[in-house]
View (tube, rainbow, N blue to C red):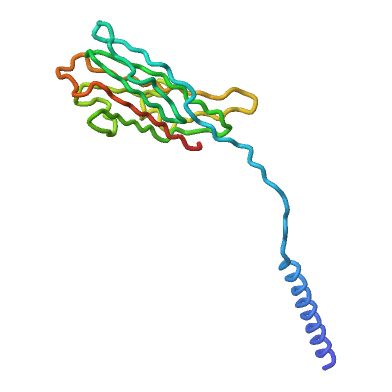
Amino acid sequence: MTEKKEKKNILIGGLLVAIIAMAVGYAALAQQLTINGTAQVTSTWDVKFTSISAGTASNSAGVASTATNKTPPKITNTTATFDVEFQTPGDTMEYDIVVTNGGSLDAKLANVVATASSASGTGDLQLTEANGINYEITIDGKQIGEAKNSVLAGKPADGAAKTSTVHVKVWWDQNATTIPENALKKLTVTLEYVQA
């Protein structure tokens, strides 16, 4: 019986040692762990229109163009505005806008929003309007649908900013049989970029 008692005492002692070890281990793990440090974000976002052409007038009907800018074209961030006035069918105005990514983050073209307004109101741009005024917007030679989701790379640390060119063409169909109620159109084009 002494041997049995001795084994029992050893077992109890072993269990007590295990419980004490577990308690010490839990206490060590339950202490608050504090890590001090700093993080620095050096990436930048800087996508905007940086230039716009004055506008090039022409006439596809082979006569002198009467297309003019009612007010000079202007840009703010990623929005461009043009006031185009037509007097002769076939008149065309074309503009080139440069988009620059001066930041280090890549930018993806998420959407192109274009609206046209006249004395009769403002609405979403119809590429071919019932009054014979037509619009075409291309980005680096691609139609809007193709250009969506294209990426304008960020500026490398040791390089030049990346650019993209938006071409806007507005014209009065030379075969139009009706005179538009208002041949003055204000066109606004906005490019929406998101981080790629």
